[in-house]
Length: 113
Image 1 (cartoon, rainbow, N blue to C red):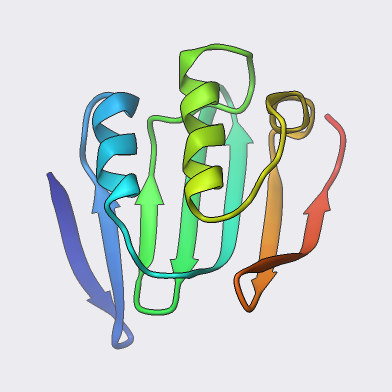
Image 2: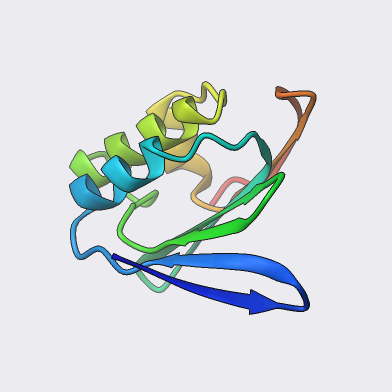
């Protein structure tokens, strides 16, 4: 299930799915083109925010702080939005922001943890 709110006339969709398999299935159904993706890991929780041409999507069950099912699902989510980063990169950086221009990766801002 999802929760939709409008903040300053921008549609925000919060995923309220309890597992990353359910959340990934929901994300794979998003047909909009991503403009940027923010992955932020803090205190053992990873928040993923996908900014598309029509809405902002918020996810909370993916993980970027260890190699496992939840981080592999995150890599699949990124691939869906045409971002091909290896799991090693995701786990090594844990927090990063990706910018896309015309559907192609244009810039990645990250720091090694």
